[in-house]
Length: 385
Image (cartoon, rainbow, N blue to C red; front, side, top):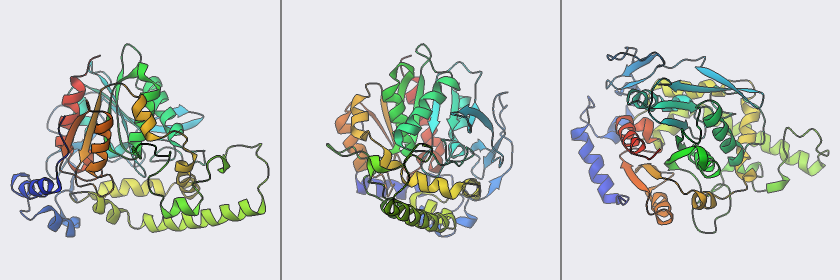
């Protein structure tokens, strides 16, 4: 397996990319970030792809660099029923005869975050399906007992019921950030329908003996008491005993803090994205995340999402240890959150894993889409059935 690059190597490649990338401006990536509103990625050219669009391909466009991607549709794409909820997904290449690929987004994101990956893989013959996990994107904003087990179960059901994964027609599951943990849960719990697993800058603590839940609790998680474990209430449990005064006050305080963080984050979406991307983000991506924040119930859902880490009972390391299939680590090496040291730890546990480094940040599939789509496709196509 390829070893993760050193910091010096990554700095050299970042400098080299200035001379080898097709960007219009010759200035280095960090300089371009300061003028992101006028960057080549920020301008959206509503131009249809030059090649013939397959019948099952969603409407497409080319970005300013000529890279094909999905057009943003504010009303979403397709829907399916899961636990009485009308959940959202995007698919392409359903009529192809290549392997099934299921794509799982990260925290605060959605199926459109795979806007480059979906058409790129479909054009290579894959059957591609990207879901919005419940509570995210175009799926309903409802107060549910969210956890990694909850979302992982949804991924298993989606792969089987929508993508059509079976023991004879298995799927490749790829996930980014916390979506990587949901994908890992699905792959480890449903190996009979899993061909391979791709972790894209995965969240989770893979250190030996690490407890379930996040590595470092955020302010929201500390405020809402995400470490209470079994004491965290299921908002859908109609038979739960009445709250004590202390519990009621703690929930009121937790919801108050979560609401403040929600609005503070909502007005800083582009700033936050630019902090974790190597190259400037565009307005369509920002708008797509804003849409989810405008849904009724979004604030209450955000509160429950903040409790997901505390509800999670299974450790990331346990899931990885239980997974015995092919594994790829597609890793943006300039990610300030999930650094290559995490990939190194995973590779210690799974030395046969394929490590695919990319000059990109936390979301390499959107930050460096051409290279990521090529790496994922080449690896997935070579997997045994």
